[in-house]
Image 1: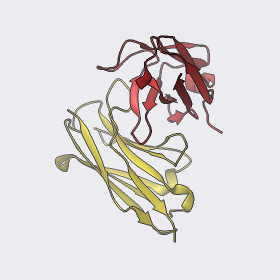
Image 2 (image 1 turned 90 degrees about the horizontal axis):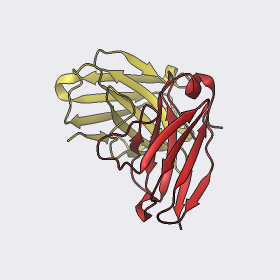
Image 3 (image 1 turned 45 degrees about the horizontal axis):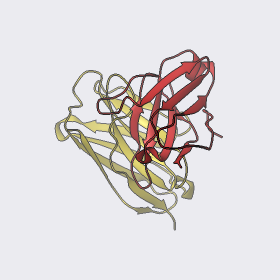
Amino acid sequence: QSALTQPRSVSGSPGQSVTISCTGTSSNVGDYNFVSWYQQHPGKAPKLMIYGVSDRPSGVPDRFSGSKSDNTASLTISGLQPEDEADYYCCSYAGTVVFGGGTKLTVL
Amino acid sequence: QITLRESGPTLVKPTQTLTLTCNFSGFSLSTSGVGVGWLRQPPGKAPEWLALIYWNDDERYNPSLKSRLTIAKDTSKNQVVLRMTNMDPVDTATYYCAHRPSPGGYDPWGQGTLVTVSS
């Protein structure tokens, strides 16, 4: 049972937009802007896509955006591309670092 | 370019102590705000954060594993070492070290090293 709850899977067609939710509590999501998102392709290490709820590291396409409302953070990927197919994990680093259970994104 | 590489045993026996070394380049652990963390990921599961050490020797641990973990740094060698005692088969996972920049998040991660706990 992860501290952060994500849907197990989402899907979309190339060019479409998808949103992945991440629900926690006030102590790990709602009261702090310390949410990050990671992308992981099979057999590879996770890659940071979003930090501080909505900031993108250098080199991450602006198709990836993050937001938060109350105790739920969201990752939106617009203009889906085949290479976006991967597992996505949300993470709170407000105190103890906790991860969500992960969401598998399928690009149809 | 920041790179990190984990090294250590691939197989440990139950009750043994695991020692992993992270060698990094492209940044200094004496730079204010910077840290190096350890995380692990059991096969088919989500990552789990283990520990973090900051430039100023501040250490942070996962509360559920704190009694078993020790993290240390050697700034001159660009190394961070993690020790985990009393290993159990449930500790089988890929272990990663990662750069923790000041703004937040772990970026990048090393390639990871798979550690299997079995007799």
